[in-house]
Length: 427
Image 1 (cartoon, rainbow, N blue to C red):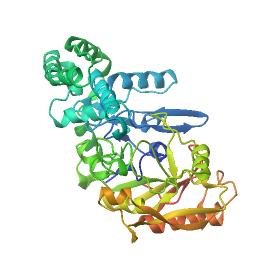
Image 2: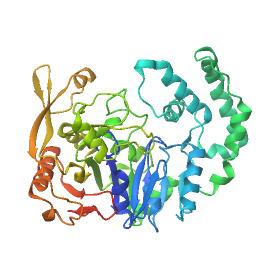
Image 3: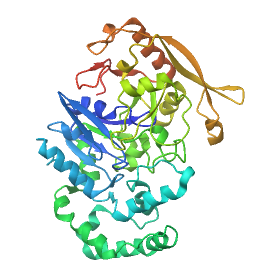
Image 4: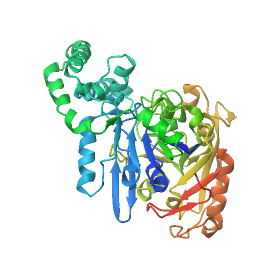
């Protein structure tokens, strides 16, 4: 069955857009299955760079149908702005499909996200302030507003009234903020109906039919495994399931139809926002990784925290996602180091631990145990095969593969679309 899941195997920002784009010419559908515009992909095509926040990367591949699944939360203003920006650059966006069951991010979600994060002070989680968490909370509390509600004014008004009954109490009495008017929210949301109507579809039916007909469907996760609300470094996580199981609940495609699960790994490690990060560097090496790697969030604009590769996290990602392959990105960033440390285990309370601890307390106290591998100084951006890499770069990749528990089937050796070494086909 030609259905693949592609997801981040660390804390996000691993280069999923590049990996999706690499497969784009062979894929019929690319589907976002969770998250919202708190995720970001940078895709380089020739001399053009595209920053995508909500749209699937497949929108840049002619012949590919991009899909926003039911598990995504959609800010309609952001979506329309992103579509307009791509159209202005000559990208055809007419094939986009949006699930009518996807939930909407409303103006009151972003307001609550921002004021509640500020209210937490030192205990803040590090959200993007884009309303993602509050939108998912409303979904679970069954007071959410879905895309399909834009086309029934009566239902839309009832749902907005129900949501604001309690939210305005919180805004006024807890945060000392002005109440939000129902009419204002309803009017704004209704204004999106005509512009979004042509994109809305029963995407579950479309995708299942496509798979049954032998077409290739790629499910694209936002963020990364360690940001999963169930399997990540809770509470410093996102509000959805970027792990492989989320592809099923976020699209309505059953697990028996998934043929491969591809994890994207950076050749080092980064994360954005608060939370534990055992291999984080606060020295010249960390700054060098940040500078050479261009480690600034596509969506947030925040500098990413940088550290050495963590094999414990990679093994965990293999386990909870059932990974069949890895795509290793940004190997070129490590060029120039004489020796490269790799975290192979943790030390917790004087004991060596080789698997991710289930206890939040233990993980906060985990100290990395490093093995050091020889580096390389040769430029690798022109390498087209694995054998063309310097011997030490080959040994580094082989060591990471052995430690991580799944084969590395592709290697990114530069930011460009063609700067990738394909070892094994994903299809």
